[in-house]
Image 1 (cartoon, helix red, strand yellow):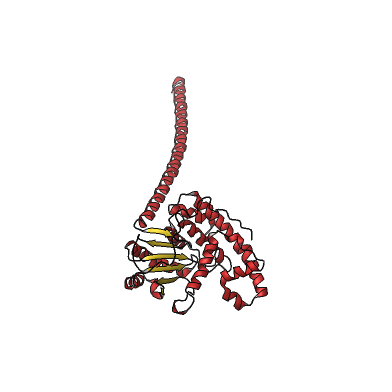
Image 2 (cartoon, rainbow, N blue to C red):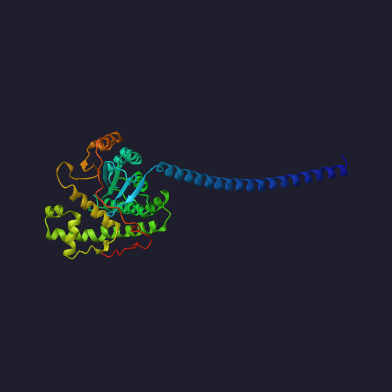
Length: 338
């Protein structure tokens, strides 16, 4: 091979190496761009999928309650679920949102009660209470926070939906749960978009913290110095709080709060059903026209049978006057100083 041929060959090889380098660089750039685009597509697609799933869940939740009759808030904070003007047996449901047996009842019989109300065969009277208000933490705070939040949901006509969601998310007994942030978020899940709901939940949670962390320990300590254990038990929480007001343990920070409503409701059922076969001795307690159901309450068929055998009854409470429910300016931040 002559000199000119060798130089031409070397030049050709050099050009081929340069072209190979350019192709490699171009492929690296395309690879990076492609990977970035794939990440964007995954993120965007994942976000779309998340929101699509969330929207589907919200729609399914709304469809689940589409046939519910009116939910009427009562003066004492309880809620009546019934068709307007219907004459039917009255089923009272006393439950604590932290009570495991109440969750079992709601899972087994809650849908049947809603169906009976939708059919006009029953007037379902939901009456939340707190049997754990004097219990050790976190039972007390869990119970009271959830009940107060459910009462706030009732202001917006979503008690039944919120009731079900609370039981679905009930924390294991003895563990902290029903966090304020979750309680507010669940309001959105049941269709409450009024900021007054979240404000009220936040305010009531502060009241609960004061009640369980400061007020109740002071009240209990003062009572134990002056009263016997039997006397304290006989008084119940409502009576003990009245005693405290007369003996230097002020409960006025509870005034106009939903925490106070729940405590009052718990004392009221003990007075209403105080003795005999119908005595209230824990939750869940289910009454058909004032007659207490036993284990049959834990069966949808048992509840339906009891209702279908009963005569029409009468609700023992009065509806809350129109416009009297809580709004953004209805004491959303009560004074929590004990």
